[in-house]
Image (tube, rainbow, N blue to C red; front, side):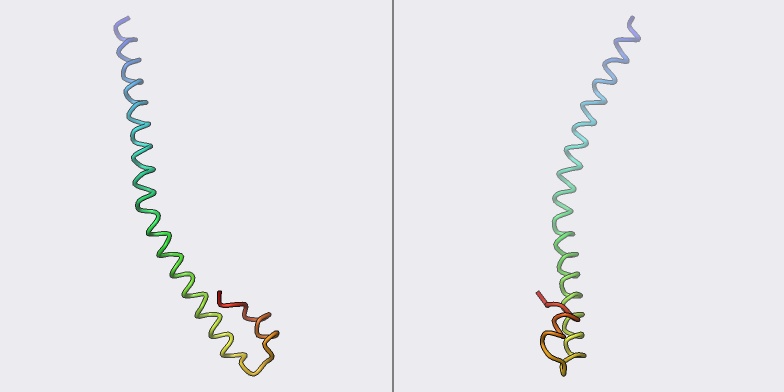
Length: 75
């Protein structure tokens, strides 16, 4: 009987630590993930803008409608 009570207490403590660890991980993920996501977005945006500007430069002698359909918009 003593052994069953000890096992039940250990599982209860483990669940409590599991929830605490989960909450801590979510908080750290939000704090670290937001700046990383912002930097990745800025990098992607700059790369896309450079691609559009190069395409527009390569097709500068064509009508605007053709350039827009081939290259897209920079924004």
